[in-house]
Length: 147
Image 1 (cartoon, rainbow, N blue to C red):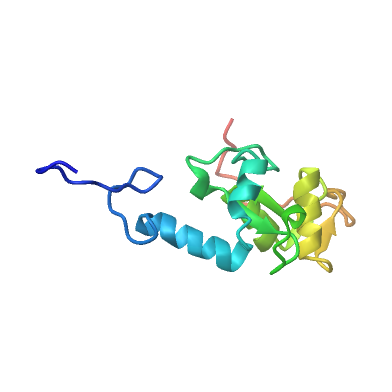
Image 2 (tube, rainbow, N blue to C red):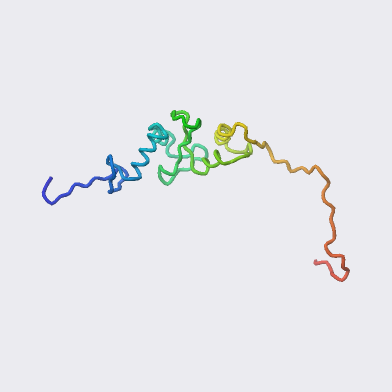
């Protein structure tokens, strides 16, 4: 290197603050979590799915806003993982009762997570009892009805 020149390392994401292994803190953490939780397959799943939610086709602002969901918890196999947006991922895990009107893939993922969950096939608006009788609010004859 020539005198007066300093070599600058950058993370592949463009960040100049390199922590370890040539990566910034965020990329290093993602790489470590990828190895630990996804068997190194997280990036492969995201690339396969085009960095988009497989249910609603939403794209993330960047690849970190799309979640890789394990269809079988703890089992990191490529065909058992799917990319989901945070909204669809929350519906899979946090919804306790669903309508069959959900998108088919979301319904399938929900059934896998909640094998004994309540699934409502349709809304029933039919009344089983007689409609309540009407009562007058004011018994006073001095009050005229509003027209």
